[in-house]
Amino acid sequence: MNFSEDHDVIVIGAGAGGMTAACVAAAEGLATLLIEKADRVGGTTSVSGGMVWVPANAKMRAAGLTDSLEKARLYLSHTVPGDFNRELRETFLTRASEAIEYLEARTALALKPVTFYPDYYPDLPGATLGGRVLEPVPFDGRELGSHFGMLRPPLPEFMLFGGMIEENTNNAYWAPVSRFRRPDGTPAVYPHTITDRGKPGFIAVDRRGQRFTNEAVSYHEFVQAMFRARAIPAFLICDRADLWKYGLGAVKPFTVSLGAHTASGYLARGTSIRTLAEALGIDAAALEATVLRHNEDARAGVDRAFGKGGNAYGKYVGDPDHTPNPCMGPIEHGPFHAVALYPADLGTAAGLRTNVHAQVLDDADAPIAGLYACGNDMSSIMNGGYPGPGITLGPALTFGYIAGRHLARPERQTVKPGRSTE
Ligand SMILES: Cc1cc2nc3c(=O)[nH]c(=O)nc-3n(C[C@H](O)[C@H](O)[C@H](O)COP(=O)(O)OP(=O)(O)OC[C@H]3O[C@@H](n4cnc5c(N)ncnc54)[C@H](O)[C@@H]3O)c2cc1C
Image 1 (cartoon, rainbow, N blue to C red):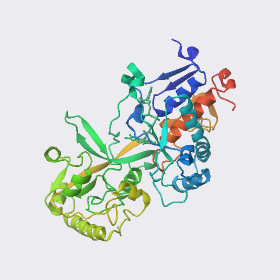
Image 2: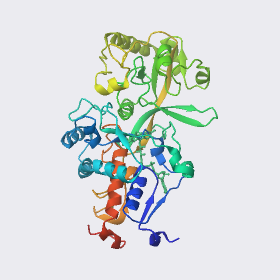
Image 3: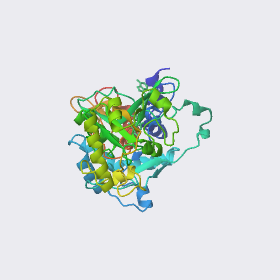
Image 4: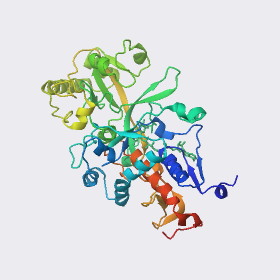
């Protein structure tokens, strides 16, 4: 087969970005070839949470939630570092809803708003408490027939960067993970996104036995704090009662026997805070003092050190039934437990520079004719900031859509290889 003569468009990589570009190009009538190197399609997108951030989307309005592009613009101006890619952020804001509408009209994709899921910096101007995040409506896999087997199955695991990247931490999107082995012995990681850190009775400390951040911030913000404090690894600590209630990493709530987790070394245990610190190899006296101070604050409901539970996002990841602060509870009845946390990447933020049509730019900022990028291959429009849930998939769908539409413009089909004049 001669790929370039038989196809108008060749898309490399079958994740959210590539699939969107391929679907749109095909829907626009272009002969499209999608090439995937793995034995299944879906990429990282398959193992993601599937959240899609689209400010001021029409579904918000239908759900009675208010938002506007001005408000979203304001929010991004406070949460995205630097001015780089400003034009692309504007394109995202103005065309994301159009992309979703197009995909819903021409593919099986269906999204619905998550009405309470605060932006990750809910106190900053322009933030919303929900609705900007869209989640997929469940799809019956049987409709795919025999093609169902081509899908990469969802996995609760992240890619691990080894945890030692301290330069250019804005080049990736981060989450803290703990490392364990599956029953078959293969290595795995557990992403500590929203299940435990923000809950009452959990603190994270460094090797000096000291807290270094509000544990109820977003996963990305938490890892940035780990880098700043050089808390690698950090240790997430709780007592048996809260471990039972909320789980701790790969240890699920209501786990009766912890033997396998402690025997493997995943879960540290101490009958007192001092023996836990010794088991972890961290400063015992400092950890005792940290826990004492934390417990006083927990009873009062105010985290004097870091403000845990002090904003809407913290309350979202806390326990709404716990008072007076949904994120603060004393750590007081042994045995006590901990897991070690390491930084892991959800995806890259650095990538190819593109213009508003998703065309890749050369060194002179001119579009390279015929070459497009979207998803993580494209330099993120968030410049390494993480304003809210779904801020990689929202732009991936939007710029995949834009690439597909731009490819389908009648004049593109006669463009010869070489530098474009657009
Ligand atoms: C656990 C987890 C949860 C996440 N949750 C969310 C979330 O809820 N919302 C959100 O916005 N983001 C989330 N993310 C991030 C998000 O999943 C990624 O940013 C996004 O999926 C990237 O999409 P993509 O299309 O660029 O890449 P991918 O989905 O990774 O697809 C790339 C594809 O290209 C293929 N490929 C690579 N090289 C080649 C080659 N040379 N030839 C052919 N094929 C190739 C790969 O095999 C892969 O299939 C999460 C990430 C993780 C790990």
